[in-house]
Length: 456
Image (cartoon, rainbow, N blue to C red; front, top):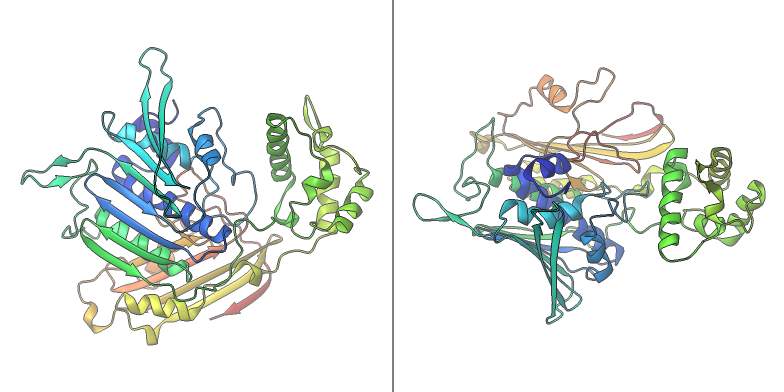
C-alpha cells in the first residue's frame, strides 16, 4: 500500500500531485531513451498530452512481458537498474510501481495504465481491497498489430472547466495559452522546459510533442553520438564495499528464485575490464575464490566483509579506471543548435566543459549560456539542469562549491536571475549520481578532484 494513496505517492515521487504530469513524462522518457540505447537505436520519442491522459511512444525493442510482470509485483521494491553503480538515467527503483498506482490515485473509478509492446496490449487497472487494505491489480492482455517499440498511456476521465472545456485532474494551467509567473510557472511552462532539456542533453534524440494541441519538435543533431550506454559493463572502480555487497546480494536473491548458484567468476564477468577469462582468473587466484559460488561469500549474518573487501580490491587492481572522455560529451555545437532554436544569439554562446576525477570517479560537467538578445524583452530565464542525460524537473544543483552555495546563488551573483532573458544549461555525467530524496530533486556532490581537463 506504499503506492496507493496521494500521500504515499508524494513521498515516493518527491513531488506534489499537481506536478505528477512532469513525473510521468520524466520517468517514461528516461526509460524509453535507455531502451533505445540498449538496442543501439537512435531514440525517436513521441509525447501526447490531452485532457484524458499522457502517452509516450518510442522506437525501441519493446518492453518484455517479464518486465511488466515485475512492475506489477508489489512485493518486490527494486528495479533492474537500482542495484548497479552506473550512468543510468533512472536507477531509483520505484518509478514503475509509482506509475502503475498513479492512475488509481488520480481517478479511482476510471484511471488505468495501458502498455503496448511486442504485439500485446496490457490494460492495467488497480483497485484497493477495502477490508484487507491490499492492492488488487487487474491485468488484461490482448493481441494487437505489432508496430514496434513501446507505447505507454496513462488514462483518466477528464473534468470540465467553467466554460465546458475538458481539463485534466491537475488543473487548467496545462493549456498552451496559460501564462505562468516568475514565481510559479505553469505546468505547461515546466513541461516545455523538460522537453527542451531532453533535446539539449541528448544529441541523438528526435523528439515530437503534442501538448493540448500545441506542437513542439526537435530533430536529432547527431544520430551516431556516443555515450556510456545503460547496458555497458559497470566498472569495479565505481564501487565501494557497500555497493558491491548490495549488487552481490541482488544476484544471490535472483539465483535463489531461479534455483541457480553462479560462481564468483561468473559474477566478475559483469564488470568492465574483467569480461575476459584471463583477467577473471587473476582475481579468483589472488583471492582464493576459484570455483567458489557467489552465495558462499555470505552466511546467515550477512556478507563476509573481509572476503568481499579483498575481492573488490583485486577487481580494481586488475582492471583499468574509466577515463572521463569515455562517459560521453554533449559538445558546444549541439548546445549552439538547441539554443538557436530557442531564439538565442547562438554566435555569442559561452560554453565550458570540465572533465575530472572526483574521489576516484570520472565525471564530465558541461555548461552553456546564451542571451535572447534585443528581442528578448519580457522573457524570463530558462534553466536546463540535468544529470546522466536526463533533465530534472527542479534544479538539483542546490548545494555545491566550497561554501555549498548552490547554482541559484551563483547565477544570482552573476546577475543571471530568473527575470533575465537568458538560457543557462548545466549537465553532469557521473557514474555514482546520488540524490537526497526519491524525487531526485537535489544532488549529493563531492568536491574532491584530481587531474582536471578543462575547456571554456
